[in-house]
Picture 1 (cartoon, rainbow over the protein chains, first blue to last red):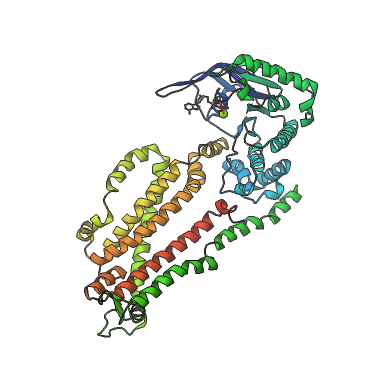
Picture 2: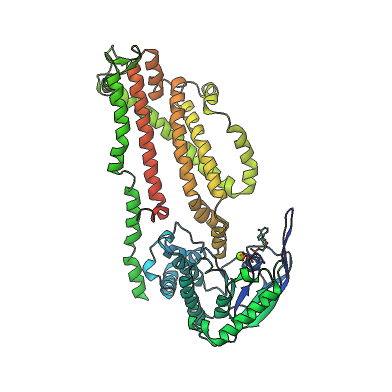
Length: 259
Length: 290
Ligand SMILES: Nc1ncnc2c1ncn2[C@@H]1O[C@H](COP(=O)(O)OP(=O)(O)OP(=O)(O)O)[C@@H](O)[C@H]1O
Ligand SMILES: [Mg+2]
C-alpha cells in the first residue's frame, strides 16, 4: 500500500499552442485510501493520472510515491484503462499472467494467483476465451484482474467504467468495492460520475476546469462496507448535493454536462 | 484453488474450436458454386460465338481449342516436333512458382523486420524511410534492364525483381501497422513491467500482424506480375517465357491456357495466404464466425 504526495504539479503540453493542463495541483493520498478525482471533461484528470502512472512527464512540481519520486511506469502502480486495453491476441488467462511473466515470476506461482484473481472477478470459466468473445464489463474485469495479480501498491483507474451501460456499471462498482474491501490498496479513481465518486471513495477531489486545480476535497464518511443500496440513502444524497453545488460554483456552464 | 485450475484446463478446448471454424470459413462450397456461374457463362458464349474453332478471323481460339492445347501442354509427349510445349506445363508451373516463392521469401525476410523497425523506431524511420520513398516510384518493369545487366539472363534476376515487387507493399503495410499500435496497449505493457524488447516482440509485432498480412497479400499479386514480366525478358523458362514465346509462334491457344494457368496460380496462392491469415488471426475473427 502506498502513499502518494503531489505538490505544485504543473503540466504544459508543448506545441504551437501549448496547453496548460495542470496548474500547480497539490494532493496527498494516504496509504490504503480510495480517492476519486471528479471533474468535467478536458480538465486534466487523465493528465494527472498519466503522470502518476509514469506515462507522461511533468513540467513542474513533485510527485512522490512512497516517498520516492515517480519514475517510469511499472508494476507497483497498476493502471486500469477506460477501454480495458487488453491484448486481443492473448487469451484472458495469458492477458492476466502477462505482468508476472514479464517480471519473471515462476509459472506455478503466477498460475495460482491468476486463477485466484479470475475467480475473484468472476471469470474463471473464461480463462481460455479471447477478449473479442467478452462483453465490455467482462473485459474490464480482466483489466482489473491483470493488475491485481501484480499486487500493485496503488491502483490508478481512469474512468474504468465510463464506457459501460448503467446496469453493468453498477455491478462493476460493487465488484470494485468488494475487491478493495479485501485488498485495501491505495486507489486513485478518475470519473465524471458523481454517484460513482461518492459510492466508492473515502475522499472526493473536485477539479476545476482547465488549467486544473483541486477546487475542493470532500471526505465521504459513509460506513463501509458499502453497496449500491447506499446510493439512495439520505446521507448519500446530501454528499451528492454538496458536490453538485461545488461543481456548479467551480465551472458554472460545464457543471451540468459533467454529470 | 486446485479446483479452479482444473476448470480452466477443461474450458481450454473452446476457443480453439472457434479458431477452427474461422479456418474452415475460407472455402465454402455454395459460395464457390455461385462464383463459378459467371465465368462458365462467359466461356459458353465464347464457345458459341466462334466459328471453325476461332473468333475474330482466326485470332482468338475457342475454349475447346484452348482446352485441348492445354491438355497437350500438360500431358503430351515431350519432344514431339509439332508442339514445342508438349508435356512441359508442370515444369513451367514449377519454375515460375519456385521463383515467386524465392522472391517472396526474400521480400518477407527483409520487408517485415524493416517495416517493424521503421514503424517502431524514429531513428530507423529517419534513416531508411526517405530512401525507400525515393526508390518506390520506380516500377519493377523499369528495373528490368538493371536486373539483366547485373544478374545476366538468369533466375536470380527474376527473383530479384519479384523480391523487389513484393518488398514495397510488405514494408509499407508493416510500417503502417507498427506505427499505429494503440497507445494504451504499449502503456499497458510498460505498466506490467515489459522491457522495450518485450514490447516489440509481444505487442508491436502481434498488433501489426493484420497490416502485415494485408501487405503480404498485395505483395503476392505484384510477385506474380513480376515473375511473368521477368520471364518474358530476363529468363528462358517458366510461364512468362512460354507466354511470350507462344505469342511469337502464333499459338494463341497456348497463350490463353498460360494466362488461365497464371490466374489459377495467383488465386490458389492468395487462398493459401488467406487460410494462414485466418488461422494466425483467429483471435480477431472469433466473433464474426460465431
Ligand atoms: N498529448 C497531449 N497533447 C496536447 N494536449 C493534450 C494532450 N493530452 C491532453 N491534452 C489536453 O490537456 C487537457 C486535459 O486533458 P485530459 O485528457 O487530462 O482531460 P480529462 O480531464 O481526462 O478529460 P476527459 O474527462 O475527457 O477524459 C485537454 O485540454 C486536452 O486537450
Ligand atoms: Mg480522461
